[in-house]
Every structure is written in C-alpha cells, then in structure tokens.
Length: 320
Image (cartoon, rainbow, N blue to C red; front, side, top):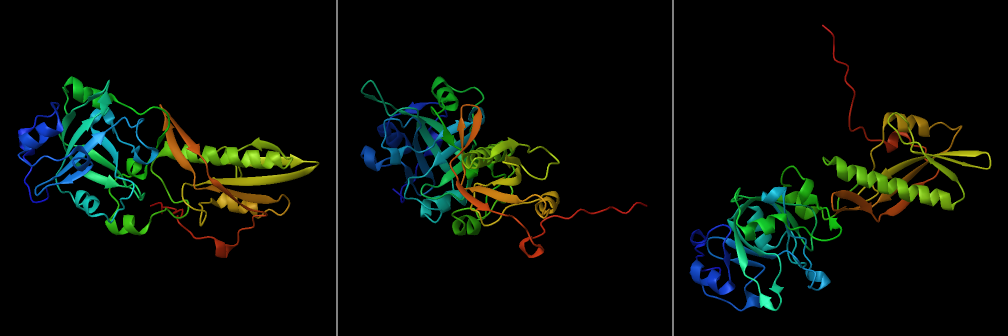
C-alpha cells in the first residue's frame, strides 16, 4: 500500500463509504477488514480509520477517540504497542497528510456500518504518553453545515469517565526530542489548564485528610489564598500543620511558596509536607475529577536553603 497513491480528493466530506468503496474510489487495492484499518500508509498520505464506540471491544482495544470543540478538534489514540518513536507516529507529527474515515459503531443489528469521510487533519500534537500514544489534531476540513452522519460523529461522546491526556492541554507540540525522552513527567511542574490543576489539588487534599483522620487527628481544611498550609490537625492538645501537594508526575520535586517555607520553619508548630503523586485526571460529563495517586510524607518538614531551587523572583520596578 505504501507504494500506492490514494486519491482522497475523490471523496466528499460528510459522505459515507464502505471499505470496498473506499478502495475503489481511492483507486487502490482493497484488503481484508483486518488488514484495512488502523493507520494505513499510502505514497501520498496516511489514512486513519476510527470507530468511536468501543464498548464491544476488548479492553486493550478501547482507544480514547472522539471529536471536541463541535467537531473542530479530534482526540485519538494509537494502537497500544505504539510509542512516540513508531514510524507512522513520527511521520504524522512531522505534518504529513492524514485523512480520516470514522464511524460511531462497527455493527448495528448485525449490519456492518460504513465510514464517514471527515477530511484531513493537521497540526497533530502528541503528549508524553506512550503505549498508546495520545494525540490531538485540528480538523482542517471541519464542516459548518455537516451531514447527518458527520454531525453524529461531532456530537458523539463516550459514556462514563474519560482520561484527560497530555495532548489535550498542551498549547503547542512538544519537540520530538522531549516527548521521546520523557515518558513520565518529573516533579510537579507547571500546567496551563486550571481545571486539571484544581482536580489534582483537590484529590491530594482528600487523600491527605483521610490519611490524618485515620491516624486519629481532627482535620480541618484551611487551604485558602494567603494561608501558608492546607490542613490544621489537632489531637489531645497537640497541633500539626500539613502542607499538601498534588502532582500528576512523580514526587521528585514540588512547587512551594515563600510563605509556606517560612511557616514550615516555625518550630513552635510542626509541619508535614504531604505529597500525592501520580494522580490521574479524568472527565465525567462536564466534571473534571482527580483519581488515584501515591502518598509520600515528610515529617517533620524543615526545608533548608539547599533544598530550594528558585524558579521565580519578585522584581521591584524602579520608579522614575
């Protein structure tokens, strides 16, 4: 197939086609269904086949594919064995032409369903995830007046929670050198998505509160702007401050403020640094939720200057 030229200009966005019709209209040799799917390489483009509703598939074939932004964006996953160094992934991220054929279900009442031609996708962005690789693409031939088949694809959403991927929140593509060498994000880092951040932080607070409550502490969430710790714990006349950090990466580093450091160095009231790392963020309808995570606790937490790495400075602008 990679030596064949696929005539994608012969297709109309929003029309539906069987696999045999795709081969005939595209002027390429047909294949058996199991050889004619996934990502198919041609001399002039890549053909991406998507079946959105995968509830009848084996768990390892339930890829997270759906349209977002009323159809302007496509979120899709590669096969599970793919990595960022896989040839087709590297070619797609390099900007080679990709055209999409999609359908909601593979079979309805025993009848094999055709595919709707969605046109080209561009500006594909991959997150750091691998096995599978998760991507976000712009639908270059988005239709403002979609056919019924295309409108159904644009509006379809998976049932239940859906994993929020790296690619969804990246403002621009990561360099291939960065995506291929960082399979898991290190430390807390910075994120541009406030809903993901809030869900991550809230998950960490819930885990921490349950942890200290199980140890017999009365726990109060006092984490408001300006407060240098998150939890106030009391037990039998003793007081404990807990600074809580949540991260979707590992526990190698976290971001702390000047006020949090000063408070932790107050020897009159001990402070713990409670980190929940490896949190997963999912969407359930319109709600963003943090799940899972592993605990790491420093008790007491007494940060020294050598433990701190300045990442930001306050600059007093000269008044003239």
